[in-house]
Length: 446
Image (cartoon, rainbow, N blue to C red; front, side):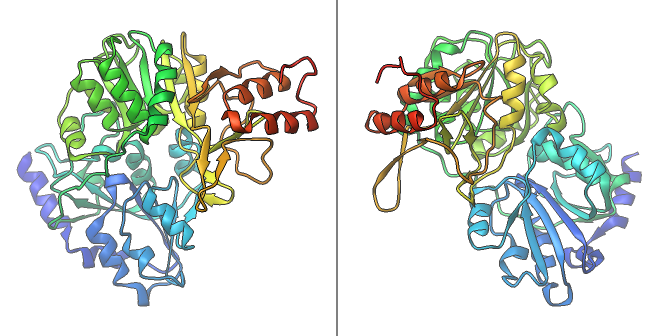
C-alpha cells in the first residue's frame, strides 16, 4: 500500500515554480493560517508578478514576510487579505497592503462552503505518513474546510511542522491533492515571548479567585493571558482543561506545573482541544504527536453550543476599550485594524451558557499615547469605533482595579460598575459624561 502512495507522490511532485503556474489572473488564492503559510510557493508566486493581474490572496495570523504583498505596492497584480491580523499583517494594514475580512470564527467553514471562491489553496503540511496522509498540524482550525472548496490543492511539505492528533479534519489524503512541493525550510523561530507587565499580573490576580478546580480555560493571546498562566502554575488550582481556538505558551506553563490534566472535562475528556497554535519552538514540540491534545476545525472549537457543554468553562480575552454602555472594541483602535473579531463573541456566548461558566474581557485601565499622555480605556461612548462584542453579550469586565459583571445590568448599573474599575484619575470626568447621557442615577455616590 505504501508503494502505491509513493507512486502517486512522485507523480504529483513538482517544483514551486511549476505549481504556481496554475494561477491565473483574477484568481482567489488561499494561504490558510499561521504556520500553514506556504513559504516556497509564496516566493514563486511573487516571482510571477508581472504576468498576473488582480490575484487576491487570503490568510490570517501569518508572520512575515509575505512576498506577494511586499512585491506589489500598486496592488495591480496581488491584493492580500487577512481574517485575523498578526502583528506583521497589522503593519501591512497600516501600509495599505492588507485588507481585513470580518469573521466570527465558528462560521469560518460555512463562509467557505457557501459564499467564498477558492481557485487555488496553497498550504504547508507535515510529511506524508505511510497511509498517504499529510497532517495540517497547528493549522487544523481552518485548513480542511478551505481545501475542500478549492479547485486546485497544492501542499507544501514542511519538514519542521509538528504532527498533531485531531478530532477530525486534521489531515488531507494524497488522493485529494493535485500538486506536492518540497524544499528546505528554516526552523520555526517562534513568536517573541510576551512578558507580562505589573498591570497584567494585577488583573490576573483579580480573575484567579473565579477559577475553580476542574475548570476548562480559553485564553486569548497576549501578555495578560500569559500572566494568568504563570499565576495558575504557582497556585493550588488543579485538574484544569484546555478548549481554545488558539493554543499558546500559557498552556504549556500550566502543563509543566501539573495543572493541565483535562481529566474533568465532560466532552473530549483527557484531551486538550485547540484550533491553531502560535508560540515558541517548545510549544510546537509539546503538541507534536501528543495523544493528550486534539486539534479540531474552528467550526467545532468555537461553536457556542459545543462550548456550552463544558462545565465551568472560563473564557479570558482582552480588548482595546469599552464605553459606559458596555460595548467592547477589541479588534481596532478607531479605524486602525489591530487584530480581528476572532472567537471573542463565540466564547462570550458559549461560556455564559456553560454550567458554572464565566467569560472575562480584560484591559488595563489606561494607555499611554505617543506623546506620553495617559488616556482611559473606559470611554464615555463610542463614536465610529468598530464594535467587536455588543453590550447585550458582555459578561465580566476586568481591570487592575476590579472585576464587574454586566449581565442583566441596566444602563446606570453598567456606568456605575465601569467607573468603579476605571483609573481613579478619570472617574469624575466619566461620571459627568454619564450624567450628560442620563445613565447616572441621581442617588449614585460620586
